[in-house]
Length: 169
Image (cartoon, helix red, strand yellow):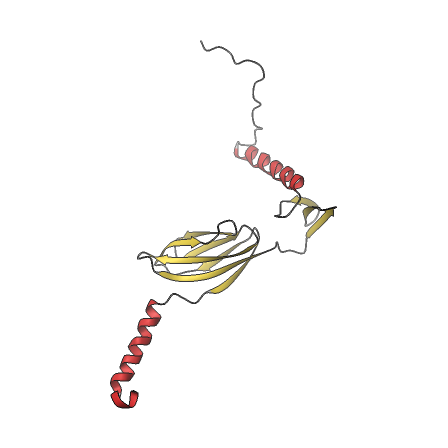
């Protein structure tokens, strides 16, 4: 065909390639993140919507200036799509969430129950997916109570009154 049409076929080929590149979404590649860690991605400023396939695995927050914060929430793999104002896919990425990193992570098995500790200078309980139900619940409850006290300016939560409520005046 190129011999028959000469310069016109070359021009047609270049235009066809340009049209394909302009309308095809970006190639998907994999972003690996550790559980409970965040990673910054630079994205096009024309992105207005972020879609996460499974929000139990990862979360993403669009920031001004073309910054996307992606956080690993659960083990596994999901996808992330970035859309422009017209709904076109500008970016497509595979998000792979791996186990927690760090040399100071210690895992203790008590039979089939697992406990995870963060041992920087001394070991402290750490909530990690896959820990035993009682350990996970107790550790999460303590962390929640501590955060609640911190949000209340350090004052402990008021105890509920025992006994009957006073009658209104």
